[in-house]
Image (tube, rainbow, N blue to C red):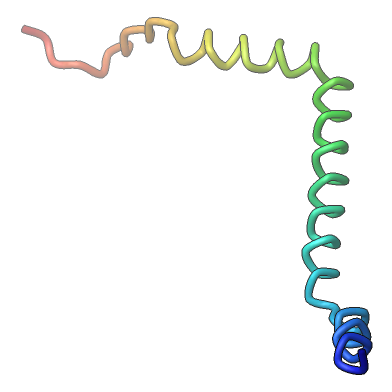
Amino acid sequence: MKRLATQIRAFARDESGAAVAEYGLLLAIVAVGMITLLITFKDALITWWTTLQGSITATPNSPSGGGATP
């Protein structure tokens, strides 16, 4: 019985699981913050990505006066 009491006290003093719980809580807070930002700025992000996509896929203008003539 004394051995069981000793193990219970040792288990109660052990703090190795506390760090995991703290990191889990921190991750949850960051995730909630990111979701909130994405919901808040949804329209602005859609506009930004659409503009960026258009800039990437647009046909570039030919350079004026900079190329060699055939």
